Length: 492
Image 1 (cartoon, rainbow, N blue to C red):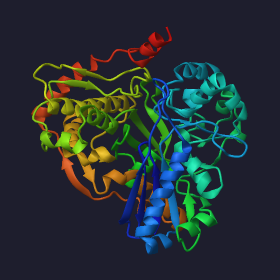
Image 2 (spheres, rainbow, N blue to C red; image 1 turned 180 degrees about the horizontal axis):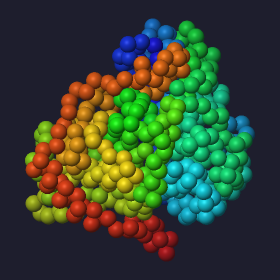
Image 3 (cartoon, rainbow, N blue to C red; image 1 turned 30 degrees about the horizontal axis):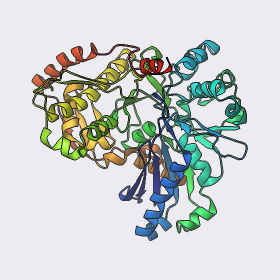
C-alpha cells in the first residue's frame, strides 16, 4: 500500500493506493486562506498539519488494515510558498502563498541584483515565486528575516513535521527561484542575492528518491506496521504530471484546481521567461516541465458561486453537456492578478457585456470561458517557445465538469481527455512517487497513463466562434488596473 498526500491551497487530499494502482480510499480536509491586505494571500502552517492529520485519522478509522500495510508515502504540495522557521523550527509568521502579489518591486530588485537569474532558473522573477517574498520580508519585517534560520516550501514543512528532517525535491525547489534548473541544485548566487545561503535551505533530492521515513510515533498513531519511506515527492503540477503519466515529450495536461496550468514535459530546457513561461525540473531525472500558469481557475467558479449564493453544481446544471455558442458576457479571471503571459500581480477580474437581459447561466458560462481563454494565452506562450500542444489530459476538481472540458476543447481547438480519478491527480502522482522510492521500479513501469474515460473534441463552427471571441477578450486586459490602484487610494 502507498499513500499520496497533496497539500493544496483549498484542501489537503490524501489517497490510499494499492499495489495494482487502484485508489482504495481518499479523504479531504478543507483549508482557509487569509488576505490581510489587498493582494496578500497567507496560510497558517498549523492548518496544513491539522488537515493532514485529519485525513490520516479518517483513513485509520475506516481502513485500518490497509493503512497498516503502507510502505511508502509521497508528498505533493502547492508551490512557491515561503514558510519561515526559527532556530527551533517554529513558524515565524504565516506562509506567504503562491498567489500573493505584494513583492512586485522586489522582483525588479532581485533581477538587478542577480542578472543571471533568468538564464539560471529558466524563469523570470514574479511575485508568486519564493525568493522575492524573502526580499519583501527583509524590507518590511526585518526582525522576522533576522530570526529566519530555515526557509521551506509548504510540503517540505509538512515533511519536517512528519519526519523531523528538512528535505525538498527539485521540482518544487524549481519554483523558488533559488534553483539552478539545469544543474538541479541550489544556486549560491541566487541565495546570496536574497541575503541567504545553503544553510537556510533543505537538503535536495529527486522526486522518486527515498528522502526520509515517517516518525515512529506517527507510524504508531496510524497503526502502521513499520515506518514508511517518504519520497522526495513533487510540486503539485509535476505530481499531476506523474499521476497522468506525462513523463515524456508529446504529452500535455491541463490542471483545473484553485489555480490553472498547461504543462508539457521536455528533455531539455526550452525557457521563454519573457512570456512568463514556467520552467521546472520534472519529478523524474533528466526531464523538465514547461508551461503556463494562471492564478485563478476553479477558484473562479467558487467565487461566482459565493457571489450568487448557490452551490456550484446548481450553477452548472442548466448549462447542459456542451456549449452551443459563446456567452454574450465576457469574464477576465484575474481575481488574484495573473502570471502567464502578463506577469501582472495588479490585474483584476472583470465581467463585460452585461445587460438587463443577462441571466445567471450566461454569467456562469462566461466565467468558465474566461478561464479557458486564459489557458489559450498559456498555449500561445508555449508555442512561442517552440512547444506545440496537440491534445491534453485534464486533472483537478474542475475536470469533473464535462461542459467546462467541452469549452476548453473548443477554445484551445484540441482534444481534451478526462481521465479516471482526475480530481485526485496530484495526490495519485505523489503515491506513485512513494511507490518508486520503495520498490525501485522503472518510471515507465509505474507511471503509465490512466484510463481516459471521455474525450471532448472541438467542433469546427464552435471553435471558430471562440477564436473570434478570444481576440475580443484579449482587448479587455489593461495593465496596472487592479487592486494596487485601490490600495493607493486607501493610503491617500
